[in-house]
Length: 171
Image 1 (cartoon, one colour):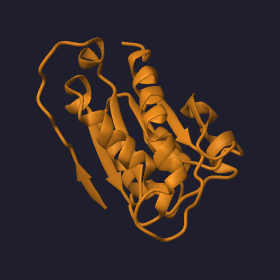
Image 2: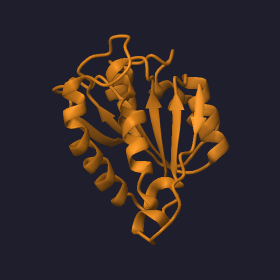
Image 3: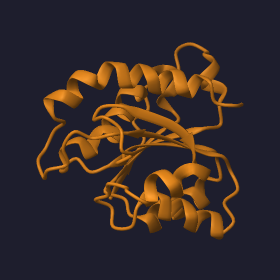
């Protein structure tokens, strides 16, 4: 597991810049489309309004997710590949209260226990901040580096949707 904060300076004041929300990319770079959360958050971090709030959790398991939530004590948006029974390349943006239904039952996870398990553990240990999930339905999770061509083609529209979702977060 590597954690990084790809900060890119704060040029202009934007509504998202004042937000307390962290945007957390979760995934594995060795699982094809499982890297979509990491890649989207890297893309978001290229914008000054988001850079200081972007964090990557590569190959993180449920225990690490829970541990970081407890340490950060800030609201968070998790961006991850998830089997939500959608068409590949589609996304959903939802509160973590729906994660058990959406993620736990059919989650794609190369992280041991899934993201929903990490959220449940953090909640049980007293984490009481809001959490949202930006889940993307993968095309392929084969063990290989890089997104599929299909996911790469969807990347610009997914990044635009993630930005829009972040701008609508409550302050």
